Image (cartoon, rainbow, N blue to C red; front, side, top):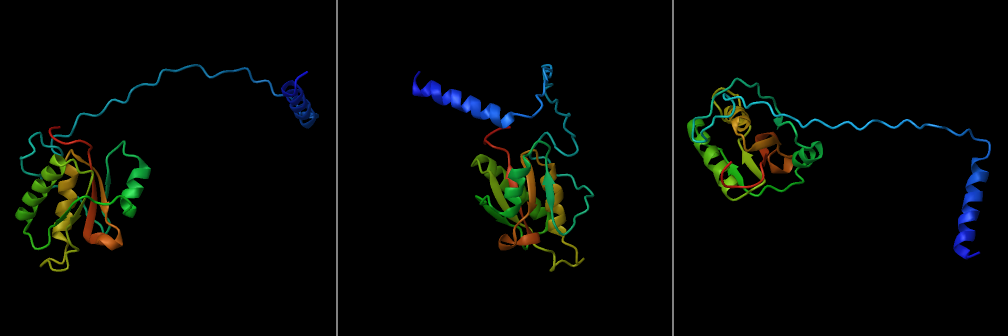
Length: 181
């Protein structure tokens, strides 16, 4: 008998000795194979995602808190957590400080087009905290929150880490690829 066979027999004997006194469990039931259904996406809401990219962004009444967070269905939690922690470095930054709402909207549209054309994955938008606003409300922060939700190429966004502007800025995760949709 070869050493290999002897070792195998010793292992079997050792296993039997260890299992001595235990009850053997017989479970011969096997889960039946079930074909998994493919997920069917819902039709896009035309008010949130205009068909024409150059079309005006719609002003929605979305309540804006201190921290901004938005995630489309299907985005991995771990990816969003990495984004929120600032572990994915932004590839470009847009600073909206000093812009009026109409100017900020155009700059945001141009910046998103630039990011898509250059196949950027994560961008950084600084909207400010709204301390300089007449109404004492963060106007650009609220508008940025609304506008980003309307863009189909935006998969997720969240308030930036403290070292990148905190609640006065957002990290934006964009769809992969560039060019046309």
